Image 1: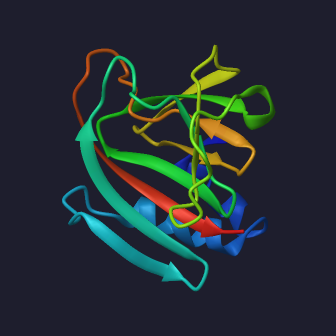
Image 2: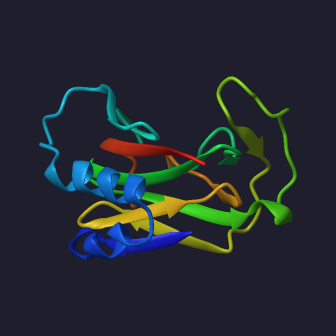
Length: 149
């Protein structure tokens, strides 16, 4: 798991071109961008969504086997607990079509608050629990870059 500032995105150009292009998309996105899916590269797409955060999510952690998630709140902020999947117990079967498994919620190894210039990158081994509020529950608009691995 990586948490960083959008001011540092040039660093990612040397690491992974798809992640870099996703971060450029995030940095240049208008907060009024329409909800939906936006192709970025052959291996990356942006998913723009909105929802209300909660004190506790209904599903625990999630993890993906075939994508890296780059997450950023373009409106407001979200707290995301995270933990290595080796510490977690699945509570659903792996969904091959949607590429995710849900895991029971346990004490996280850490948390990140995304938005306000801070993004997070979650690799396949990073269980992450989105939808948590950063304070009072409320509306967020979020961009998730899905990078194929």
